[in-house]
Length: 127
Length: 137
Image (cartoon, rainbow over all chains, first blue to last red):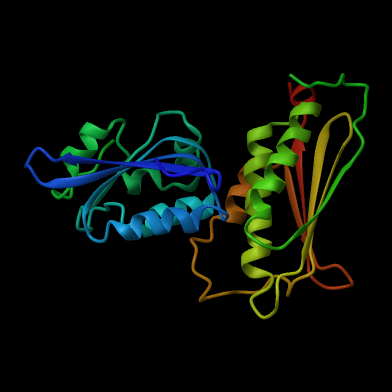
C-alpha cells in the first residue's frame, strides 16, 4: 500500500484473467482531482501496456480532472484494445459523475474485479 | 440537515489560495463544510467548486506564473452563493489544453444559476448558486 502523501492511496495485486493472462488490479482510495491526478498517472505509467483493472470503489471524490485521467488510462471502449477495465461501486460518487458526464455508457464499468478481469483482453465491457 | 436554523445566518467564508493544483482539495472541502452547515447540498458544492477552481488553474495562467484564486461563499434563506475569482488571463479557448471540456457542463448540472464575468481588473469571476435544502423542499 502506498503512503498517503496526498489524498489518494493505492494498492496493487497480481491477478489472472480466465484466459490465464497476467493482470494487475490497482485499487485506489481517496480523492481523484487535479491535485492527485499526477500520482494516478504515475501509478498507471508503471504498468506500461499490461492488462490492468482499475478498482475505483473506494474513491470518495472524483471530478472531471479525475475522469479525464481514467479515460487517458485507456479504459476499454468498443473500438479499443481492451487492456484496461474499471470497477465502480453503484450509486457511488464515481458512478454519479460518470452518469452526469454521459461517460458511463462509454467506459462500461464493472461492479466487481472478477467481471473486470474476465473482460480484459477480449474488448468486452461491463454494464 | 443544516447545523444552523433557517432564520440564522452564517458569516460569509472567504479564502485566498494560490492558483495551483494543491488548492483544489482545500477549496472544495472548505466550501462543502460551509454548505453542510447551512443546508446546501455539500456534494454538489464540493464538485462544482472543484471544477471552478480547476478551470482557473488550468486555463487562467497558461501564459504566466500562477496567481491567486479567491473564493467567497455566503447565503440567504433560500440559496448559497459561491464566487470564484482569479487574476488570470480570462476565459479564452485552449485547443491544446487537453481535458474533456466537462467542467462547466458539470457546474451547470449542480447549480441553479451560473454567471461568468470579467472583472474590471482582469481575470475571471464565476458565480454559482445552490438551493438550500429546506428552502427547496
